[in-house]
Length: 81
Image 1 (tube, rainbow, N blue to C red):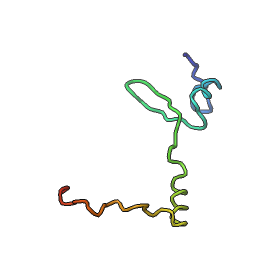
Image 2 (cartoon, helix red, strand yellow):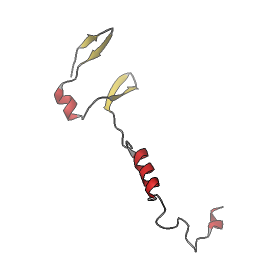
Image 3 (cartoon, one colour):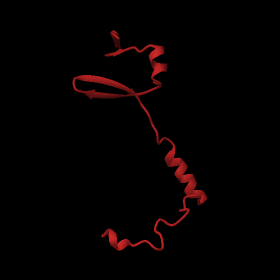
Image 4 (tube, rainbow, N blue to C red):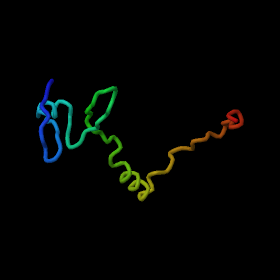
């Protein structure tokens, strides 16, 4: 697909159609990757967005304790040395 480079203030940019934005789930930002003489645009993703707040709430509520021990009673830790 060919698109025109347009002036945007003192810079230049490209316009992406609503169809492309919807199809590739592009919202407010994209990741720009320079790769082997090409520019790749990829939708930004934040898979861990909100985790910090959720973990803090878990800690405040005491919900961040282990459900069971991570070392079993009959485990031989010497064999891992």
